[in-house]
Image (cartoon, rainbow, N blue to C red; front, side):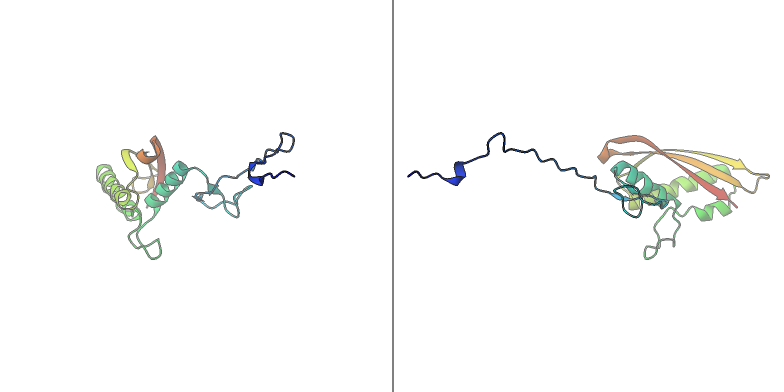
Length: 156
């Protein structure tokens, strides 16, 4: 009679099977504007890349005005009130840069703002128009450099 410990027994090569499990990427956040979700996303389209989620969050921060976010009154750059009183291009640009910088420093300190370029397109007269500006930024913690965000505001 022989004694064999089960701890020293393995599988033969014919008994081994390779098990591969296919894992789906984990969603980070919801894409805005809201869109129906695709395969593996759920009800809404999702971000799976952190840099894209930060880009989306920065866009939402800049376009949000004070009082728009329920429970957090001073969230956002509050640019809407500037679009009703454009006195000069230089003054407008200075105010926009200051407000965006303040909002980003408060709510998204991991984003490093670099450049601001603006352009006004007047429609019909000098009192109304479209203001487009591009913000270039870095995200040092994600090794993202020279990412650009274009924002369009309509002037009353």
